[in-house]
Length: 62
Image (cartoon, rainbow, N blue to C red; front, side, top):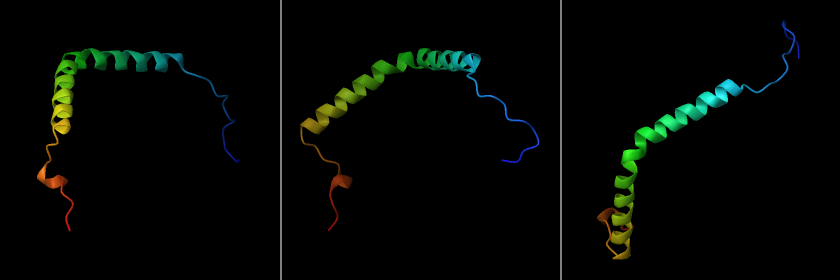
């Protein structure tokens, strides 16, 4: 490979890894109040499917 600059050795950037974990933890903390709502919606959705209720758009057109 012809380049002007010499190749640099590969290395890991622990600062970037730590920053990623901090951002992920921050997002998880912000979304923490939403988890119970999502769980309730999921449970209600599962109960609706168990009853055999169908949405009109679920029908296969002929």
